[in-house]
Image (tube, rainbow, N blue to C red; front, side, top):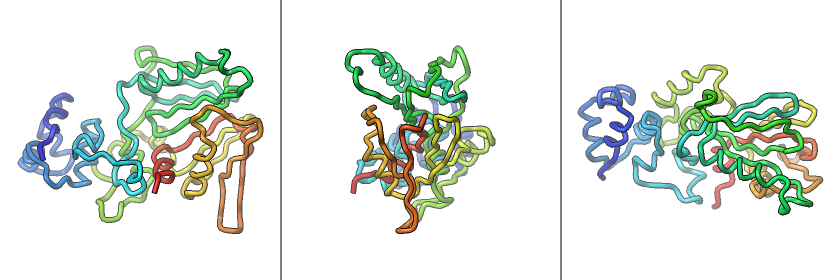
Length: 280
């Protein structure tokens, strides 16, 4: 099949030699890939997506349907549109920051503008947003002292990585017969993040921040836990006064819940969540 790889590469002012070196192929092979790519290699596809900052489906021409998410070898969450900057939270005595796109900024601003409106009377909506750093945030507005949206012209955008990097961090070193997840460009992106980068966060856990400032983490390896999150329908922005979230289950030996009335914020790994809640 024909490709738009050359167009994407030139738009980012990358030479053919540079891209070939970064993905570990000969220049002549890179030229062939740019002209015609009949059998896309998962390894090359991942690295090209990271280098060109695009989605794998833009390279391969195949986008997964929701029922394919559970076994899709590439990142489900796509590269967002135009980068905006960051959302900065002062919440229960902590200062948190997350990179966001222009579209994510608009969705947050729209939610904030609705507070105090007639449609919110008698309701207790929470603030929801996905981020560029692989997390989905569910924020209790009662816990927020301030929320600020800053363009990167005002303050440098908080660190974030390509979705394929977060996929690599959420999975084992290999992905069955689909090729290793930890490819050259992915590994370099993780190394560039350093220990303080958001990419070094564990992409297999739900991070829980409580109203008293304490923190907890719970594994998101169990589809049951992901289904419990899905069942709460967090994206509707509604939360009943007393809601218990099922966060732990180990056979018939351990079952654990948290009282959402005591939660300031949930931070959920988006990639993992989508895979575990994918329709059959």
